[in-house]
Image 1 (cartoon, rainbow, N blue to C red):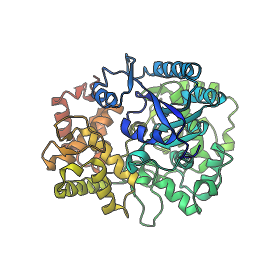
Image 2 (image 1 turned 90 degrees about the vertical axis):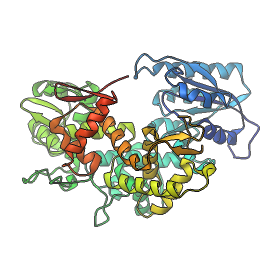
Image 3 (image 1 turned 180 degrees about the vertical axis):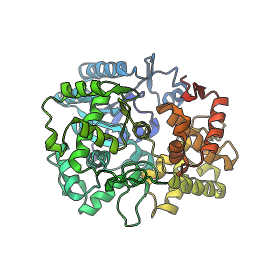
Image 4 (image 1 turned 90 degrees about the horizontal axis):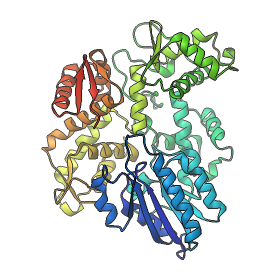
Length: 498
């Protein structure tokens, strides 16, 4: 569909539980496909009351579907599907469907709409998108790209290829392996055998790796080793004996047994097992893990993965630092619980990067003279121009998003809800911003997993980049308790759910 084709009529469906977005940015982009004649947003509009005025200002029909718990989102999928199919038969004039969601559950709906000759567009965030959904639609774009550009990008499938790169890099990163041209291309081809360099705009293997770095987790935050190689898969800076896992080293004085590519791949079977049986926040007896493993993977041959037997596999899983074995109880390590949870939240904590970007933000904000132009987008761009040789746009965007969640920003009319393009101001002493960001990160970590006293050095690594600021952490924890954000029970710090 060419950009110039403006005779189409467009329906826009927001899966608001899945993607909270600025509607103006969505409609600016949707206008490229024709006239938007139907607008519906599905969510719990009591819980999300702050977002209602913004949606209503664009005449979006709000479909209220109360959620009884945080995982109760399936009803949105069903309701949107029913409504979209109704549009096919009652509004044949509508031939473009725009869905703001990254949920793979919509793939059957997308395919059915295409059967009826409809043109399907999907807009979703980088950290919450199904690869299969992106491939199934006619046009796909990242919401973050629309936010950063504040103008509609070309209507092509380049974002789909970037999503492929992100998925491939994530697989390799989770295996603890350094990305190379061979393993990157092998993984990408596994996802999509039709992938070609000329379609992706990548000119060389080096440009492919660089593009992936700018779109995934810790690597996109500008972190490099002294030799220029990619950092390891951990989303924190190595300190105090925290050696590089890619080289097969381990914490402490003893050398690790080393984990090769095949063995790292095998460890993913344990991860799949824990996710399937909902053991991510529990410990399981080793004999139970063995029974579940044999039942789930009866045809696995250990020697194919350079593993002697099941016990050797357990040792390697612990060596990877993704699992730990206490006596006869096997579980995710506290480190991996935190990393897994932060990744699912789309949060990447790099202490040195955080300090640098926040310092730059404070300087830019303090020197910004025009209040009408002082928006998060303008500030982020200025910070990027100061740091473009060090940090990517995605890294800076991640920090700005975190700052937005701290609540330190407000509209010029003192409203608590702001968009990235709305004039804003800071509602606290400028020197407190870094502390509020650290408290936000700490609260998110406790939301992922309960924290005990012995875990505080590890948490200190994530927040400060060193493991010896336990005393400062305790003060922050006391502040969170006073704010009734967390509680302390049986020597554990626990997130206090609303």
